[in-house]
Length: 105
Image (cartoon, rainbow, N blue to C red; front, side, top):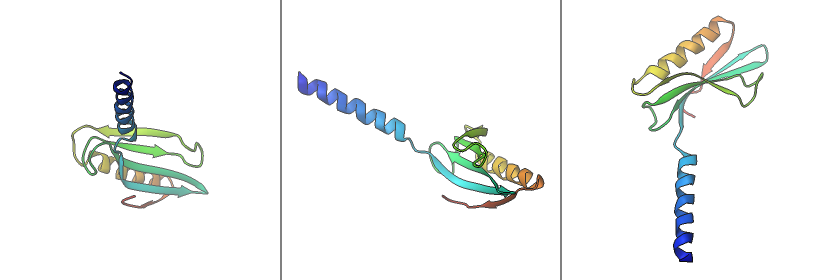
């Protein structure tokens, strides 16, 4: 009986570890700077790299380190997050930020 209970705990632990470690991929990152401040725009793939579902995540690294906003997300439309991230980085550049695309990370 004890062995059975132990194996149940191991299985539950394995499942929990798999769920928590989840596959999250960042394919595109735009690093932006303006007068010593840093901003970051990232495309994150929640399952398979390069395919939805995805999120466009925005970080204000200098002002609020560790905080992240999800600006856009897509469940099925390929290319949606990439287009939104690029357009937002261009908007930041229009506001005086200097952005560079670091590609794969």
